[in-house]
Length: 113
Length: 110
Image (tube, rainbow over the protein chains, first blue to last red):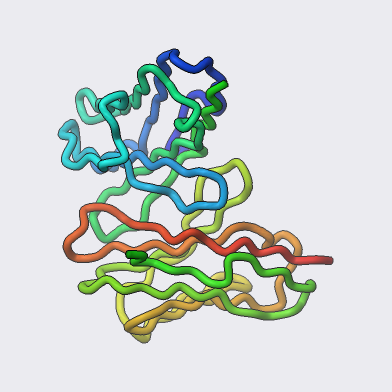
């Protein structure tokens, strides 16, 4: 197992376009999380899956954002009609149990121009 | 209302100059406090988990301690490769996820 994988590492898109990111968690981890991080800030929670069920969404997650985790394996995060304010690092993390720390992926850096 | 506050925001040290980073929190029902290291352009890397007041963990030049209101990350005789942002994060009883502080940017000069 090579840890949490995220794809792509970098994405540059024009304002108004749709983008989709993928996360492959550690295989035995049934809990998967998406966070967003802007420069100089800590990661901010976006959404959480346990297996295939999306159990919590942050108020940061507007209607333009949607996340899925089909079959409880990989997850995708889609942003529709991107805005410049969406520019950030999008981080995926997973863990096996609630008391464990997260294992993070390397992130996807989104730049909206 | 900030639940996790890290200080200082930035710290510059000379190589070999020991210091401490602080993480204070206001949540109740703490179930775990985590320290992460983050290099520029990368995801956070897990360092330590502390579960109860009085607990200490060590790894190389780093030592993390926990009280009922705060945690310290002590760095002894740091080297330039210790330069990074150090993030503190909490998991507490009424939350389903971990919340993060804003981090301390540590720079070690040779």
